[in-house]
Amino acid sequence: IALGVLVSGSGSNLQAIIDRVGDGSLDADIRIVIANKPDAQGLERARKAGIATACVRHDEFPERESFDRELVRLLREAEARFVALAGFMRILTPVFLTPFAGRVINIHPALLPACPGLRAQEQQAGHGVRLAGCTVHFVDEEMDHGPIIIQAAVPAYADDDEATLGARILEMEHRIYPQALQWIAQDRVQVVGRQVVVRGASR
Ligand code: GRF
Image 1 (cartoon, rainbow, N blue to C red):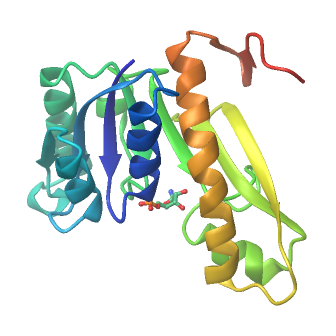
Image 2 (cartoon, rainbow, N blue to C red):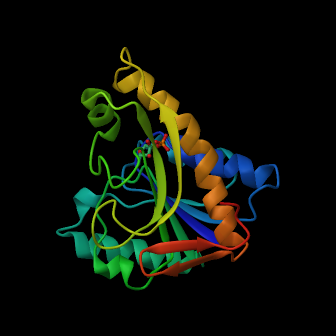
Image 3 (cartoon, rainbow, N blue to C red):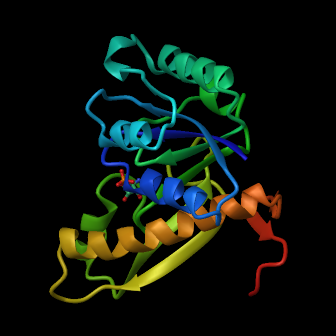
């Protein structure tokens, strides 16, 4: 798949995607990596891997729609067909989601629909959950809401804090995000209402 990746920060999920493309387990062509902050470490990771980058500073746009329009323009120019959000901390409007309907994927560090929104790792540690995890899902207009492609659980312990639990979740994120993208690349993913059916996946 021709993929665009949007990042805001460290980009470790981007790195996992780059690495799986590198070892041949993900059939993706990363056409462009776009950040909304110039200091996003994800941009540096992309450059190192020889991937085209762009920075679109959200604070230079008067409202979400014009920011989104610029993202769409760059993604189209780069001929990206699917878009993976990898720690991208901006809410996307229909200006973005309509042209890429059904082709935007996100990863969230919790077992949705539990703990949507910001600081999900802290929410889980603070709540004393026994099972934490992560979710890869299609993006719709509600935050952390669209059809779920894959989830993975990790144990949470009484002495976990945001950082220790977050690290355990992140390790799992790096496994399931490339997996979900590979299913899409293999054209095995179909959305039926809220359900995602993955052809050939075991139960
Ligand atoms: C991850 O926990 C992801 O689930 C969340 O933001 C974090 C991004 O980490 N949406 P990274 O930038 O991929 O290292």
